[in-house]
Image 1 (cartoon, rainbow, N blue to C red):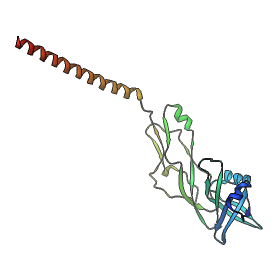
Image 2 (image 1 turned 90 degrees about the vertical axis):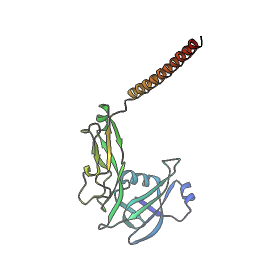
Image 3 (image 1 turned 45 degrees about the vertical axis):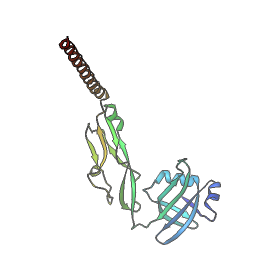
Image 4 (image 1 turned 180 degrees about the vertical axis):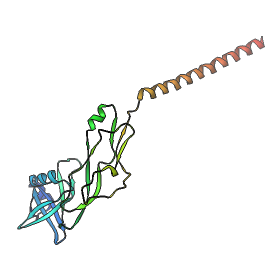
Length: 214
């Protein structure tokens, strides 16, 4: 990724269709930078938030990773700012690694509901050893089963910073709406019958009172 030092204000940089950012970390002063949108987009698409890559600034090349990326909440493809953190080979990185479900369609084809509860997992790992995502195969799961953090296949040197019993994905049976509606209908019928019975009892009481008066 090719970077240039930024000297103009943020709005001016964005008007030129450049993406403003900053580089910081060990052995480098916090430096405002800017990048062509394609340079940024290619790097972000390939490395995401959990892999290191080389960024060239002037004559120097730094090993960095995306620490933070800010996007416009109304225009998700409009990047406002990015942070790059420089690392060395001996550093450890902490990042949220996305979870990708494999064979989700196979489970849904069986009429089951797949719910991704944790879309990413905070993980610590050596610099230069990042992965783009965790893959979880859910094809063998049945209703009322789940996969936890302990089910992740961790590469060597990776440490998950979350409880092992944390649920990542759960499988459930679909709610049977028809049965619920039938139960409601039965309750309504019982209530209607109770009202009718009450009315009949009152009518009989009134008739008995009339007979007594006669």
